[in-house]
Image (tube, rainbow, N blue to C red; front, side):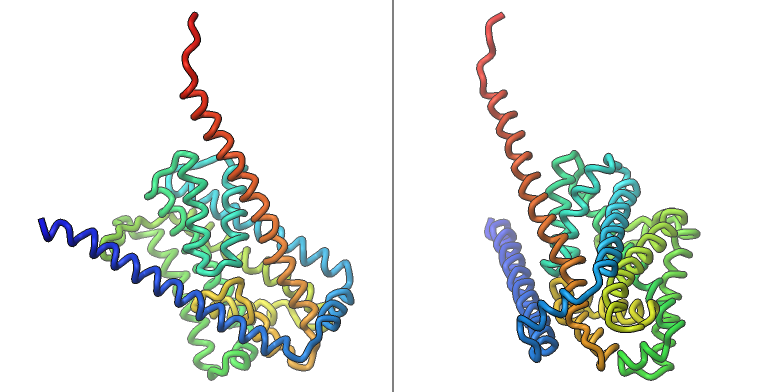
Length: 332
């Protein structure tokens, strides 16, 4: 009996430790991002920041907004593909709603895999999916982001090795090795999808590789998503410099690799620091603020409104269903 009672207690202690470390890592990540952002913005007044954004051409802002919207559209496509891969397809409007809300919030909350996964779980379980189905879909989306980042990173680094060397401080040989490793990782993933039919077992988890066409779609959609976000950033930076698209894509990939490691919410401070390093003699604060508003803060506001509205609808429907069940049957 004592042993049986100790098991829930051990689970509670393990869960408490996980919560503690999660909170600690979140606080440290936010502190790191805040420090980097402060270091980047310290020399500017609020009036200067506002004026630097107002000075950007409307055409550039519109194009950047279009690329940001296209990126989120691409991300909804990844979720749609993930549910098909899990064998639980849903109508696209439902998938698009859940994906946009979860990702617009997850990008800004930090620990995107956990935060957006929790929101997806809330939506998809309401629509009939089980816990295992949601876990498969979230894993599929995470792998898509990883292989997409590796694919675009390989192209950017191998085409622009000198810039990557300058930004990272690594030797040219190390940069080229990193680019080849990224390309090799994508090739291995596609190779496993083509020829490996047995489930891959990692500890207690059993993972089935998707068929090759689905894996290729993962690589393509993942890379296109990061290419679109890079295009959004490139448009606002082009308003103040003649920087090339591949240069922006290279630094954006490097910044995102750092964000994935640190889990800084929205990449606050990390993206700014890397871009300032790319263009040290250019006033890029206005473009960076515009980029953050277009890709992070604007979608976050829309996502919060959509989340509140859908929660209200869900609660109204649940209340309506409960009242119908509680109502006495009318005599015929």
